[in-house]
Length: 164
Image (cartoon, rainbow, N blue to C red):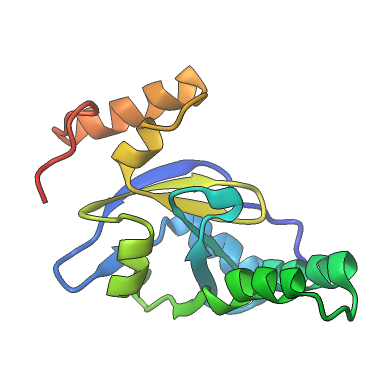
């Protein structure tokens, strides 16, 4: 695995064809870590109301961690966790313009409408509906200020999600 990690944040839009631009810094990390322009997108971990995206190297780490937790056991918990980690994650390829296509299923799963708030997590990054992110309890006030300023800079009200 590369020493590269995901850092930072971005606010992007989903276009009418469900295309979403992945931040350039994130694209660079994906290629450095895995040698491809491919990533996986699935439900947010820990029950987070978002999507989570990661490259092939982190996918390998998820598999190794899952095996370490469960071994070759056949209990239902092992299979249920695998279904969520691997079965609910969809592969995506970044096109030459730096975009992916979000399926309607992924958009629904992440409650993604027109805007996506990207937040880095080191080995992965999250994709949030910005207003769902701001609704989180216990959110660090500095993150609230950062996202609020990003929304305001685009003429969007942090307190009121645009009508769908």
